[in-house]
Length: 375
Image 1 (cartoon, helix red, strand yellow):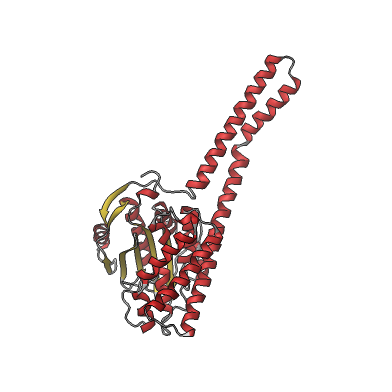
Image 2 (cartoon, one colour):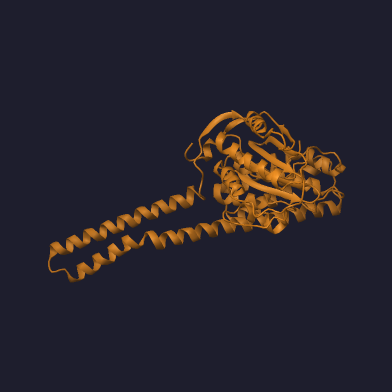
């Protein structure tokens, strides 16, 4: 089972070292998770699916890059999966930037230790790819982590400056009244105004701290239910099975979990629509597979790739891009896809290159109930 972000369907064509690395993935993540929980205090209470995050796909990317002829220079090339990792760390965990760096160092060490246990010997040029992949991955993850927190601080400052003007004005007016109060009753009345304003300020600060701590991003309202993801994909394929719509192929495991059926259906509809709109008319492949408590859904098409500088920007609201396929911009569909993934406690990413085509990924916990506030 391949989990790389280009969603290669099998390990055919990969080198012996690549296949060996894929075979030890489970052992690597068992060791890595144990080490992270032992070394990072904030990780102790983080549920397994959130701790795993998007790392399995990154791991398989590295394995692919170890094959000299494979069109992936390193584990972080052509994909936004590592920025998605940092974004999810900022939204869903109490990790700090230095702890993200540490978890990547432990990730590298776990690969080395498990390889040694299994008698797998990396050539110097192969291990250089592993190290370069992790170095690039940690930079991208920490950069996005920092940008997320910077955005939180900006929204916090804007809210403070706007919403707190009225109670601050009330407090200031009260102090002025006390200064000129002709009698005790007037002074008491002004003191009550000050107390009222101070209480409102305190309430606002509590709300802001709660928002900063528990709601690190605007989330869609989701209605969770238990269902089989293969059934949802089958329904979607029936909707798109009309003359002229193009060929759709699905490789979806029968995974049952708790998700919002309507929002996932709409997100996949958007991805399929884009695949046909911006692809080259070839078949579109939907994949669905589970790993360590997470579901990875993807939609892949062939055709002209998304330029590297646009891969992250196309997920932003109100962003218009010239996509190079004769269409003006990507619309609001991809920002909605990211909102759905993040609303479920997961991430959205894209992998796009001329050789491998374009793959959009929704990577979410199988049981999203603990991570959805309105579930």
